[in-house]
Length: 161
Image (cartoon, rainbow, N blue to C red; front, side, top):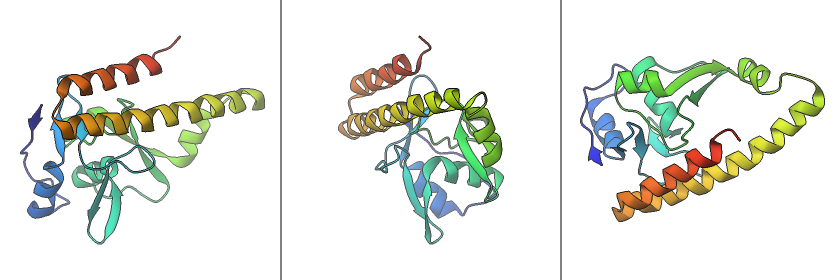
């Protein structure tokens, strides 16, 4: 587990960026995990520029600028506590999608199928929130082994059956 110091991205000031990076660690698989407190949605939360940000959305903003109101920043790595602080990692772990594009991708098919997907998604969200809180506690305690276990459980739970 290592702390990061990176070049300052174009859309943030150095003081804010140092404060953000102080709450991110790199784990062995390459994810940059937020060690600040998780929110009720399972994502990290960060206060900057007179507003609250999801940590991953702030990471995207730092390198790419503010996504439009009709865009979501979603995780490619499917880890809600991932908040990449380098440009290459941000591009590899995050992407910006339109809200309508995400809805279409999630709810394609007949109505019954969309309903079943919604049920699965709700339980996956609950599981990610629980795992994010466990990972947060493990990181704060300095027990990387417990963190690795929490992350491997998340990967097992999300693996196709």
